[in-house]
Length: 101
Length: 204
Image 1: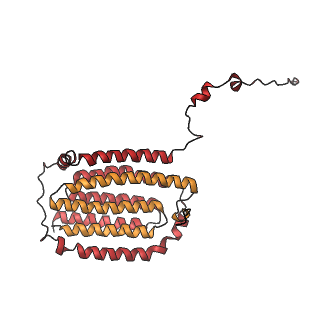
Image 2: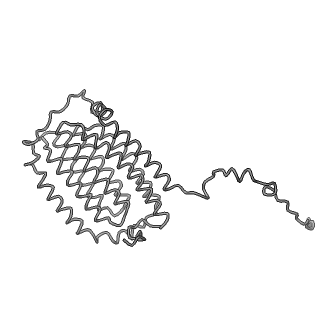
Image 3: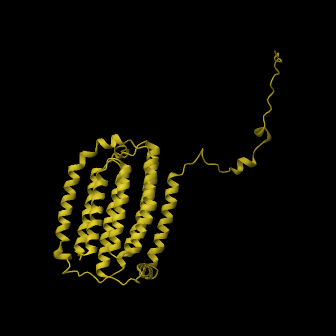
């Protein structure tokens, strides 16, 4: 028998691995995007676990919309990345400091 | 130990290990492959939770489309790995500390006392003829039809935005310029060049 807490702790662990990945790979934008994908997979696991244990299908609908938004985000993110590489010749975050923020 | 529990621990182990290897991978290509493995493990865990449609969607959309897009970009952009690698260990301690704190906090909240089996009982498994897709569709096309349409519009906007961003205007495009075609003169098309005749070459 697997309890709801097992699923929640599993997705919490993966969420934190993705969070640490954002800190570790701070300079590589492709890795940042992939870590965001990992975090979203963990969050979706949370939604589906609650949906299953409460017998309500609305959680799965929400995951469906999260997948849609994430796909759009990846498409636009990679387009911006390609544009940035074309204009600056690098995808290092430290190179994109023209706003001096 | 039940068979489903064994499956949960196997897939959960794969999920966590592939995610940890992914964030610490030095090579972006390897990281993408490990992310695909973690998506597969996540889809297996979703199958255990009877979310068959979403599990198949995760594999089809994420492994089939999104990760292929990632691999395209990784291969297309010639990223200098050595400059990225130099800064790798600088933020490693901070990342580990933050992750450990968040895991500890979440484990306190999500412990078996709040969400254990005696608090939230495991629901009975559905029969073999139960269709997850039918139940999802019943809700998606009635109660959530307006968000569904909005999601479609969002995808359309994403397509247009991505194409507009990376579309290269100018030299490569072969589009017609009608006014230039109409206003063309004969002297623009043909130029008569008078070449002085040279001496005949003696053949030997």
